[in-house]
Image (cartoon, rainbow, N blue to C red; front, side, top):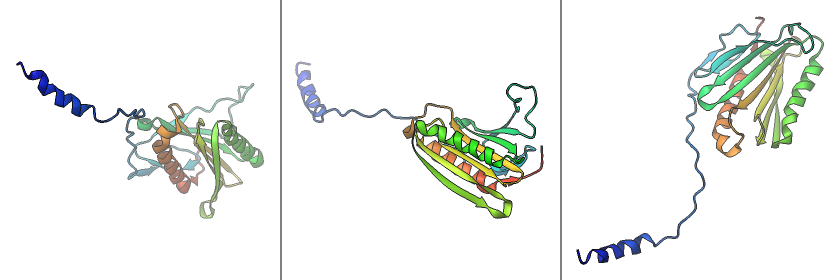
Length: 199
């Protein structure tokens, strides 16, 4: 027992060889949904898309026009929710009735409102002539409330706007895997988008 402090000295000497290094805060690992199974939208909507099997569909009640009690004729609202990653794609469908220019202008203005917080924006035109689907896809970077938006139309009857929302603080670094996953999901939806004549 008399020599026990001597045994501790080499251990203390070995434990102090490296200077301590500050480590950045870590983030939890995000388990992304499986991308192997997609199914057509089962709701009776005026459009069809293929959605991830792990996503949930929520049809929303269309609100009345501001200042009146009239329902917004022909509109259809739908959310595709990804509960495991706290993300939602909100769809707003409106029929085209000699108002395509106004619908496109509104969609573009809503996308550009987010550039105040965004550090950048990328636009990409898309078209699927065989299905009469034409539109514009937006990617925003930085601390914007939405990172991805799009609108699509056939230019005569149908107009659809989609917006991605994450239900967490807009920390671009920690949300990067979710944002990339959701952008691929939205591109999948756009590529499978078709027009129907359901209510």
